[in-house]
Amino acid sequence: MPRGMRYMKLAYPVAILLSLMFVLPSAFSAAPQQTKQKEWTVIIYLDADNNLEGAGVHDMNELETVGSTDDVNIVVLMDRSQGQDTTNGDWTGAKKYYITKDNDLSTIGSKELADLGEVNMGDPETFINFTTWAVDNYPAKNYLVDFWDHGGGWHGVCWDDDNKGDNLNLANITYGLDMLKRHIGRNIDLVGFDACLMAGVEILYSIKDSCDVGLTSGTTEPNDGWPYDWIMPALAMKPTMTPKELAKEITEDYVNSYTDGKDDPQDTPTATMSSWDMKMVPQIFDQFNQLSMRLALRAFTWNAYLREVRANTQGYDPGHVKVIDVLNYPLYDMYDMCKELLKPFGGPIVGFLLDNSVKQNIDYLMKDIMGARVSERHGPQFPDAYGLTMYWPSGDNQVLLGTPKTQYDARYDNILFSKEQYWDDFLKAYTSMTNAANTPPYANIGSPVANATLDANDGSVLVQGTAFDASSLVSVEVRIDGGNWKKVSGLANWEYKWNLQSLKGRHTISVKASDGIEDSPITSREYDIKPATTIAGQNPTVVYAGVGVIVILLLVGIVGFVWMRRKGMGLRDLLAKLKPAKSAETESD
Image (cartoon, rainbow, N blue to C red; front, side):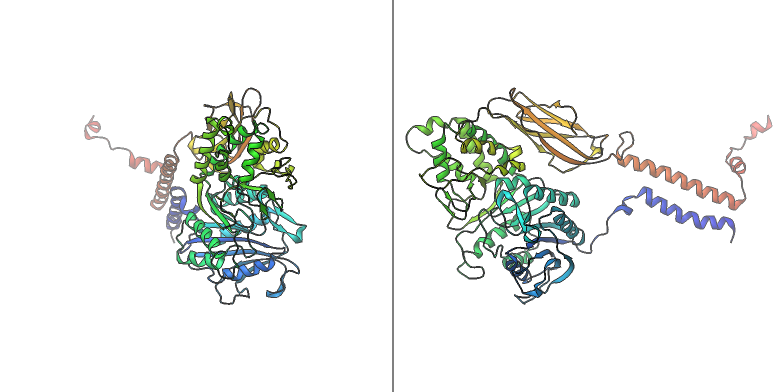
């Protein structure tokens, strides 16, 4: 074969490859696509490593009444206990399952994907490893993450008896969901708690930045928990449900299954369920925080009034009777508290206690609760339930002489909600029957949401938030990665233009406010920043076009070189051919 021909055979595939690599880089970086992307993947973190083992086996069989379909994946990590339930081989440890349909209501027949041995379901890394694996292997348009186990309100969820009773506290839940969100690259569509007492404002605060819809139960759930043999058939029939529609379906199915007059599950008057639009709940936090400050300043002055409000507000303790919280879960309905705050209790007292600013604050809070609520149902034992609770111990306050007290739990100080919001400070003033001397201001970051991915190619991002003080605000400042504090534009509604051009990786922005006496607690949010892919600030499209032109010129050069070798020509010969011929007049001269 002639030497030049060998060059030509090499040049053409090289040219094609280089063109594809540089001119069409996305063709190499795109992830392989499924033949058909499913609508939903339901990811159930089923911690039955405790006295709920039998209920866990039962719910596995309920899931199998429909199983996974062409449109819905159901994947489960189930951890079992020792000595609780002896059925289905009485195995212990944890196994991954892909749920498939069968008609046996007592035997788990689904495909076992992996036997992990004993794992700690109270370790957030266990949650992260399972859920990220699930989305990698069973991608879908929407994800439901279901925490299945005992719930303890602001104490957390998922207690693991074989690991010394370790559990996922609120910080673990926040961390686990944030890591899953970062792995997916967007918010989780729906996060639900098939667990007791998880409808607290403290829980919503912990998941606010990682999901679009939150689904919770206000009081205790029966052992049977969610009726998966109701929920999964409904999803299979309509797999195109939106996250809000599925949250409504679960809410309705849950309460209906316990109030339909039939066994399995056995009826109970205590069922409650609610779901929340997590894009709207930050407005609740703002208004509730302002109300907390205003009440703290008068916690002793208004003591009799506040005790009466608490006594008439709907309580969610499983043993709640009027002012008594038998099981020491003093959880009270936020919306119902607002209603009671606005009720006159006789005499002129309310008229001069509640000034217009407090009344307006309460009115805004009630509207924000209803604006954020997606669904809510409750059984007859909780007639004044509206779906959102808060921790409210009695402390030294007693409405009826001799009734038991619930003291403030110092562990409440350690949750993120207490570090960044003022309700815990009101509780300390209320339970000790004192007025707060001064309420420091607060400041928060509304957008971008925490753990969002920002693009340095955008040049900058506008960081926005709110701040408040019961008297007056003097300043609001931000800092980047622990650097110097810088003043922002605005006070109650503030903004700051953050330059991203030289940044990449993980970065933190913090904010604080001052009333001239005290600074607010520092609120911080972390973000992932994609490095700039531009050259000297150029648009990426322009850069790729420039690279394409360079590649084409190189290819032209390669082809020309091969052609010259085939013709036996050198560079001088080529230049001679390209040189313009002299005109006849010039030659005659």
